[in-house]
Length: 545
Ligand code: PEP
Ligand code: MG
Image (cartoon, rainbow, N blue to C red; front, side, top):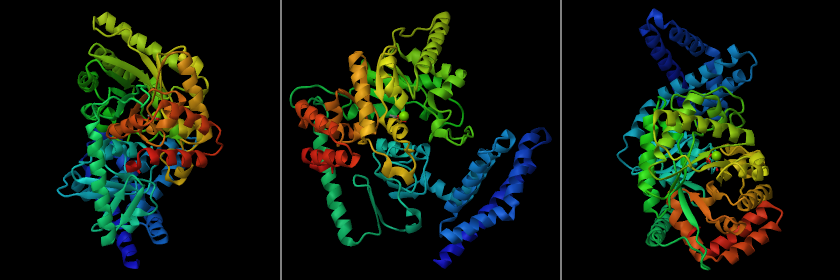
């Protein structure tokens, strides 16, 4: 351990030397006119040459026995958030410098490895402290067979992207980066949330058997892909897919989905360094819409912020990003960007059954503002003689307790709701969905969450507007009977999970679902509810567990 520690300390020092050399060269290459950039580089150089900063990181490695990467990220982020909390904007803006330096130093440490990840030629498991959703989306799933991270939660966007790609992932693992080495053998059991490092021969054999059973199960499910999602007592359920990229639309179709229930368009921004043009938006949406012809494609306006930022790392400095300028709030303060996207969505609305959904609406005023901007864009298109569907359905995501509690008001001014349980749970229980330290407190089975769900479902059905659930609970076999029993008839979920969820639906009657929902309503603890739902689900589809 002592020699490993010395190696990590040496890596920290080398990363600093490398970053200083790189910055010095960059600074020298800048002309006098680029003096602003030169100034920034000079500030970074000053910090990087500061011996006490380096010492703080190497001390962390020695005291906590961590890798160089981990110590560096923790220390620089601590300093960044300290700066961010300052009232003086000049000082608080320095936080961004520390994020930049973190990136530069990590590139020194990981640069080569990163390149390797992009050019893989054999199968690997990615083990990391944290991965951004964008990094995860760039993995080649032919070679990346599993992901294990220390940070994150089951519904963080990194986990969601991995699920969409069909890559088994386990997040919120304590100190996994310290336990593996480059030549470890790693089993990632995404179903049970387990990672086994350097398993013995017997365990490997057991998992080979399990993997083969799973693939037979998947094959059996594939056979029912064209069968309807109908309960045994004849109630039809609509199954739609959640996508991040337009080319996933084919996967939804191939797995037997009836359309797109949630298109997370912000990935268009996250993937590119520059802001997408109206035409970039148009082409991506048109591809998804054409794949589904007359079936619905629900396009969500950009939901940036919280754990989703553009590649460039540009982000507002906020001490509480989840409660900050994210999602619709960001759009309403960046109208050029917002209108650009709305124009593209309206233009594709003539190609099929396109619907617009606004994320994170937390009050009626916000919905009215968003609709007003949409009307402005419609008028602009009218003036330019560009066609669109003037009756394009407009819906909102129900993701905050305030929206859930005022659902009857909101239902009066929109065409449909989609319940985003990922965020709704986070905001109801005050638990960051991407924070591994509180991940055990995050639960869809919490009576508070279920009470809000009941309210929203009741109000949407009473107002006779469209209703779906598009959070991760819709991909979870344990929750399907409960959601149906509560009155939901449309689910939007991760494309690879569509066949499995269809099988659950085809195995139950609505009568049983209603009974189950009534029974759950009498229970008072999340543990009791969770155990009950699990016991029932295991009986219905034992292969899924
Ligand atoms: C949700 O919050 O449940 C949701 C579907 O949106 P996202 O996961 O993209 O935040
Ligand atoms: Mg959300």
